[in-house]
Length: 577
Image (cartoon, rainbow, N blue to C red; front, side, top):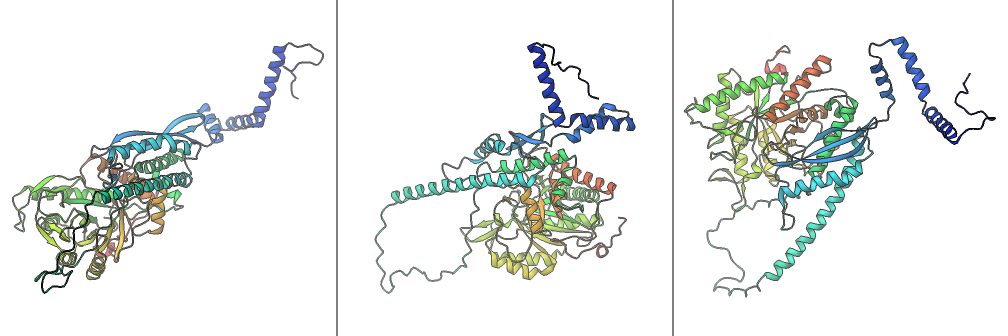
């Protein structure tokens, strides 16, 4: 029977203070009853009496934690950080209200892309500083207000808000550019001198004839299609999206890769095959060879990540030993340059055969058979080699090749080196006819890949090129986590996730993204540099964790888009290896 203690009797005169105290207790009773506090306290006390836990208050804390309101985003903050190249970058921080306390739950940053932050025009050409400053303003201002109160575990809802915001800014940027272009055009027209009178036609020639005797008719190349400039500040969108995903994983108390997998509504875990950069050449190297930016190791199927890294380190040491000697076995002079941005040794050479001969020799010294135990991918980066004044690719310094001649060169190279199983960006995207011809001459022995790593996945995808089996993708600028998930669902066997040379320092979540997204391959670069090795170490840790839990699905074949049909039996490998 309820007690009347504390309640005033009707026949007793009470003071105003006692009446106020009575009203306050009445409101307190209604408040607690409405929120079922007495009922929950009674439940936990009864349960705890029978459970008799060692940590009584820990038991109480866990019980009431389950009844607490779900966390909500309370705000965002943006900070300037430095990337792996020493350039300024943006880091987004997510604050959440958790059990009535505001806490910093995560932070993340994304690369600015391959020079996509370089804007055009006199008023918009403020470069990276403008990109960074605008991104910080977005994070601290409108994005913080828009996401306040959102559920950090609702990645789709958060990314939809980010997408709507970015679309509006993108439209504003396009209108600003259009207006600026019109002003520039008007100014140029006003500054142009009047056109000269038409020339007098020479005797024996018709007016308008300009052809000269002996002039060769060169085949015109398709003009370069300039990429759509990135919107200043767009990297804030990608950074916030990734930071929210990390917050969702923290709140759900699961690793990021499991959180991403749950967003995809998948349950099967596969660790991607790591593609390790063995050598760097290319246009940025001291040698004459411009063509091969990277020679990349494709390991045999059935290997653990730690085994792949151990093998790659042995190859790396053997490569360095050969390069530091005077000549290779093939009689070619070798010279090692500094470590590249990709974390691999730079080879100073004049022909692509020198780089491939060096790798073949190093593998032979280690007892590895190219084409069986290892395969190679060549990152050609040919879209950076076109000399538009001559309409040819400068494959080697001073040596130019037309698009058709370059196709012939690839065909000869693949015949000599059958271990090459993939060519990344072997031509410009505008050379559609040559892509088709290259695909027909190499057949099924080699995969053609398109490098879209410098483009935001939030944009419309580039047109499909004939013969291309996959694309290399990065999370840059405005690329949201939902964009990556969508691309993987649309192209489950055609995506290679790649790291960037300019990622914010300390950001190692690419390995979690690769496992959670279910990509078949991940390109993390060479084995030099702490920020790259942190990603490799994280990939090893994830694989070991899944193996211990019995949820790791092993690969018996190298999946698409590389080395389709090459399986463990073909490579002469046992499951115990």
